[in-house]
Image (cartoon, rainbow, N blue to C red):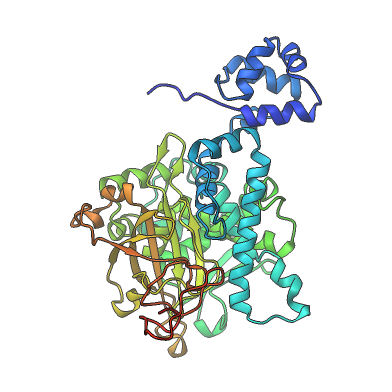
Length: 477
């Protein structure tokens, strides 16, 4: 495989302008020609290792920050955002978008921040309804869930520092699935002096796990099954032993124009990053990726092989984005019976609703009528992008007769060009013109016309109304 060329044009230009240097001044500092600096800034030449090291030494910057490349995901996000009907003028082509990212990356990021805020505000208005003056700040402030989603999205749902921490935790040791709980329990007791105890459900009436720091005890509810008990033990271990790695991710976050500063947002991010660590420990990257490819992403087989739940497998496959060892880029969504979105992760350009009301034409909702059965579906978004989705219900821990049927539905999806790598797509003919179901993000944000499932008037589009005719719904005729 040929070595990957490194282009750093926008970052190099920004670095030079921050130092208030001309191209000639930077060239003199680096010992290269001004023409070479100009070519580098315009991404017409790749960066050599020697010049990269010279840049790092001369300007005191981390070379990893210089070569970190998120231009592909930014380009995908920009293309997706500009498909919004609010941009009703002629849309820029791919070449124009690439030029914008090369020459004005800050402006492009600001546009994405603005569009995301516009979408979030629209969704939040739908969820809150008519808000009084006292609700204005809450409406205009990103929720902790949005902060978590943006953090994971910015990193394409992959955190190398946590993968390294997970590998360090295992130390190359093969741990039998059936013995994992005992191994973790002993480890917590011997290394951290924490006693692990299983307690009756009524001892933790509103919780599944409680770490009593003062008493040096970790209490696990009997409502947890074996895979979830293992997961919770690793989660706590991650928070205690690998807190530095988790906090490094949060400290280095750059989302929605700033860092993560609120205590509530930091706590939510810390919980999700500890979950990531736990998944990486119980499903080691290399072994899990190899098994995923060998089984063609058979989720049930993967769950059985690694002794985890179906939902944990779905989450883990979204994280397989290590450079040079990438899996299929997936998105993941979890909803309840009312359509409320409880969890979302995304390594694709698919637009996920933050608040409730996901499209009823999406089979993730039909899953509740077929519990435990996988429903595969090809879908198309209003911008024309197509995806293959795998939908199924999952059951939450039961805490007694009052929590029966505590069922959720999850959807795992990828761009249609990756569908052939999934065993669930094998029986479909991709050339079938009726294969794809048109869906939207949420009803009020969906621009589709003549939809038989429309439940709300779209916020940014006037649907045609003709009193002389009756359409499929009362919103359009």
